[in-house]
Length: 526
Image 1 (tube, rainbow, N blue to C red):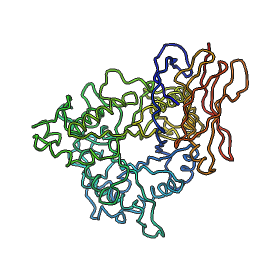
Image 2 (image 1 turned 180 degrees about the vertical axis):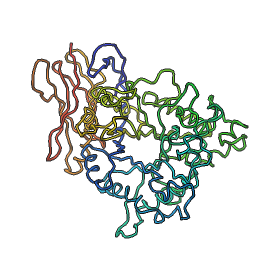
Image 3 (image 1 turned 90 degrees about the vertical axis):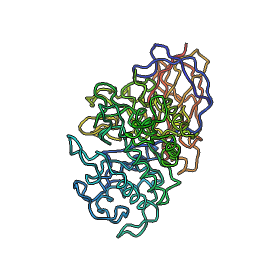
Image 4 (image 1 turned 135 degrees about the horizontal axis):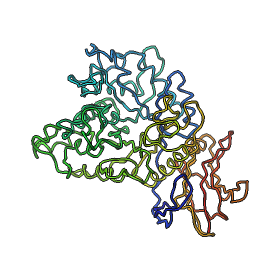
C-alpha cells in the first residue's frame, strides 16, 4: 500500500469546509502506524473504573494516559509546612489519595491495556516556592525538585509490580510507561514562566530540575528500561504584548531552547545569560551538560499536545514559528534533532501525542472551535497525518465526555451522554486524501478499525473491514472491497476503483456484537 502527499485545489470535497486533494505523490509506507492512546479527565471515577475502562476497550484504545496529580496524593497539600514523613515510602501517604488511582491502574491492566502514568502538578503547597505574586494561592510556583523526585520514587515503588499495599493480598500491577510533569511551558502548570519583562525564560530551569529528579527516581526504583516521556508540551504560547510573564504560556520551541541552554541561533548560552537560566556559563561546564542531565538525552521520547486550535490539521498558526501544533510537528522534530547535535548526540526522539482533540460548538463558547461535523473530519485527517509520519508513535484523543460547563468540549460524547460525530470518527477513522478521479482510476482509501486488534486476539481470527459505496441516486450501500486487517493497530491503506460517484463508508462487526460504521466521504468520478 502507499501513503500520499497531495496538492490542494480550492474546490468542494468530502468533508465540511474541506478542499479537494489531487495529484497524489507515492511515498514509502510508514510502517504499522501510531498506537491508539486516550486521555480521560472528568470521567475518571475510581468507584466505577471498570465501566470506563471497558468503554475505552470497546473503542479500541491501547494505552490510557492517566494524570496523577501530586497534590491529590500528598499529605496536607494545602499546608505551607512540610509534614514530617518519608516521602519516598508509598505507605507514608494517605490511603485515600492512592484510592483514586489504584482501581484505575488495576482495571486498565486487567483489560490488557497500557497505563501511561503522567506525574503532574499541582504540587502540595509545602513543595512550592516562596514569594509568589498574586494570585499567591497558585501552588505551581517554583516547585521543589527534590520533593518531586521523592514523590516520583514513592509512585514508582508502589507500581513496581512488587508492592502490596497494607491490607491487600497481592501486589499492584506494574506501570512501565511514564510522563514527567505536564505542560511545563504553561504558567498555570509551572511558574514563573519568564522574568525581566519576559525576556528571560526561567520555567525551563525549573522543569530541567524536575526531569533530573524524576529520572533519578525512576532509575533507582527499577524503571530504568521503561518508556519515559518528557516534554508534555502545550502547543502554543503568548508571543505578543507582555509575553508569558509569570502565569501565561510560553511558545514551546522557545521553551525547548531554554531547556537545552541555547539561544535563538542554537548557540550554547554563556555568562550571565546562561546563569539566569540555570545553564552552564562556560564551554568547559557545557561539556558535561549532557552527562549532568541524562533525562534530556536518554528519555524514550517527547510528548506533545498538538492541538490545532480550530485550524485545519495541515495549517500552522500564521507568523508563529515557535508553536508545535500538529502542522508544525516536523519543525518540532528538527528542533529536537538540532538540540541533540549541539551536545554531540545523534538521537532522534520519537514524538508521542498524549493530548489532542477539537473543541466543538455547540456547546463550547471559546475561540478556536469547530462544528461537531468539522471536528469529525479534522480528527480523521489529523490521524492520517500522524500515521504518515513514522516518528509519531501515538494518536491521542482527549476526553470521552464534554465537561458539564461546556468549556473545552473535545469529548466523543456530549455532557448529557449523547454521541457526537467524533465518536464514529475516533472508533473507525476514514480519510481519502484524494476524492475525485476519472472512472476506472483508483482512489487511496485510508482508515483504521480501532477495535479490530482486540477482536483478533480474543477470537484468534483475522478481522476484515468492508469498504462500501452508496452510488449517487441510490438508497443502499454495497460492498466494493473487503480488506484484511493484519497490522498491530488496525490500520489499512488500499487503492480502490469505485464504479460510480457517491458516498463511501467502512463497516465492521464486533464479534458477537453490532455492526458499526465510519463517517461518510463523498467521491466524484468524471
